[in-house]
Length: 233
Ligand code: DX5
Ligand code: ZN
Image (cartoon, rainbow, N blue to C red; front, top):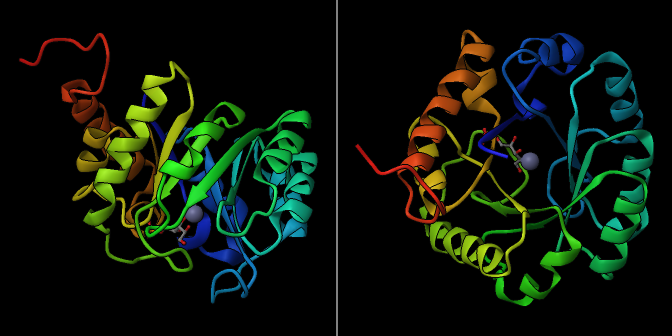
């Protein structure tokens, strides 16, 4: 897989979720849905019933980002509902391998998310159990925050760990990803880009997705981590 863009509905109009999904249907790869429980993060968004409705209202694959306590208990239900990717936080999971296996057993992709201060090293031996690693580039909880450059070295180390093991694990970034910052993320090794305000704050969300993709693809083509890359011109 090359560059993938996953617009975050957190910055969309919650009263018109189906329309907001449709606005990026032709340009985006995924729809990123942020589930927040007011415990793991201070914000409260939506849960399984809304995800179920959204699944009926769109044909786009849903990329669920669970920012909730006790994902070991709740994550599988999102996969069972039909989310194609379910990501839970390492800081909240008591049994990440069991939870990832439960998600995969239901036919969804399993993702593990790391907050900015959570190191990647304790989780590299788990990469084989995962389809995606999400490195948060803001503190989870709210859209529209400023991108944290301090996380870039961790993205590089995560990319090295994935490549070093010969794995196909996707590396997602989420938080403050915009035209200003997406190239730095791609250069560090990210290949799945979540963008909330940069997409839904734009006049034309579809056009914003295309612009972000072009930038990420150009930066990826230049990036040193990319094996078999075309020579830079
Ligand atoms: C934040 C969420 C993000 C959020 C990103 O905790 O996980 O998905 O929507 O929003 P932006 O792109 O505006 O930082
Ligand atoms: Zn998110």
